[in-house]
Amino acid sequence: MSKKIVVYTAVFGNDKNFNALTSYFPEFDFICFTDKKIQASKWKIRQVKSNLSPEILNRKYKILAHKYLKEYDVSLYIDANIKILKNPKKFIYRALKTSNFIVSKHFLRKCAYDEAFLDVPCLSRGLSSGLSLFLLSVSFCFLS
Image (tube, rainbow, N blue to C red):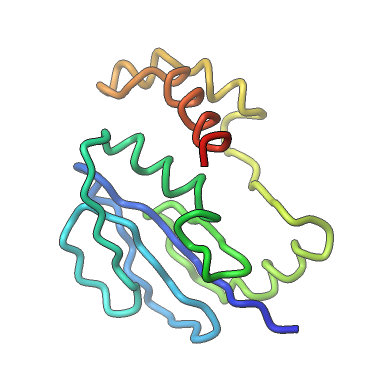
């Protein structure tokens, strides 16, 4: 059975990281949620207007794919600064054999609690506290 798959990302605020696709994989849709005017021929751009902070908006669309991408059976989130070099089809189908939900290993942290209590670096960059962002992210899951 063929599944309808989307690869998606989110770019909000002053984030300038957006890798346009250099390769195209027609078996997927590529969607970018953003508050910017982005020209990207291989991405479907979904403009978002909101009073929420860019950090919160990014997490909202990252976490709530089931709400904003209901027309798809499978979704794969990638950070906007990630360049897709290979067709992700094999990766997705291999992962779906063992689980319905997959999270990649973080390059620095080992668990969500580490991310939650990462207040100091977030504050030094002028972002909301890591704990606040984590708690808000968790609340999205229960409120949707």
